[in-house]
Length: 430
Image (cartoon, rainbow, N blue to C red):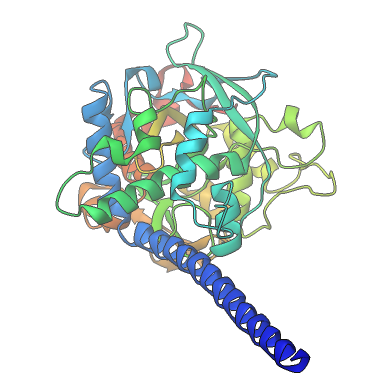
């Protein structure tokens, strides 16, 4: 009897063990299926980028009638987001305010709905965590970033922008999640616009997509680079942001340079000296057109803005052979990101000197520079025909909007600085 009982118990234990392993395998299958779906949805988001931008723009213009498309593109702004006309970048005052980032719990709760399972019982807590584990791009670091706290584009002494502190992954947790949410909802109802109830994050932001007091908004600076020839004509450049290289805007054509408003070093002093739009633009030029490594200053080393190429940019700015304009800020409808819109106009001779060794590819993607003449990049003609020939469905909202604004303000942007009354715009630092 003892032997039979033991054999019986052994059989039960084996059976229970088998059931346990089967249950665990089922758990793992559920988690794997959830994570694979997340990756496929991100691929769909990238592939339907243009379509989703248009859908998002339509929804937000209807929800907030003061918003308007810029030149028929998906890039959105309203009167409160811009000066009455392009202003020199030097006219924009940037200030620091030591305030803690807001915590919008309803927004964070809504964001978790599109996150995959990390285990059977739990989803990933943040979109950045899921992205880092399942779809990690080459450039993906949670670096300190400057958060937009308040703006006044109609201030009597010139536009004013107030910034506070934050982290880059705070942007990912909101912007990528709200775009992902729309991709999933539209895939379920491809023939019609999804209802707002299917978009809990976007619904919270429908009345006021900026909501600066209640969510973290981390602006980028998008700069349309123009090379002005002596006859007053101009060419422009773009960056194709390759898939797998960047965290946002994969597979799209964006302005070059473009980058987050971030300190370039972990040094405490960097928060003071790098809260500067012109220095942000210069660093991005060095990285995206000259191929320098990204300025991160992990060791605490600060950027020396007195050395080339920064000294060359500043010299060109001082003598008027480079003019930098600010046109306001705008909203990218798909991910509700904010972009500060600037245009840099280089006289051709100075541009050719500074960018004599411009790269064809950088860490983010491929430089779209038109034909090269003896290694010098010349750009694409800034005219209606060239802009219309661009692949509309793969153009980022900032690139498309900036090109339309450049065509609209062409006379001001490309006027001869020597003939402009008072030299307006000749010196446009910040």
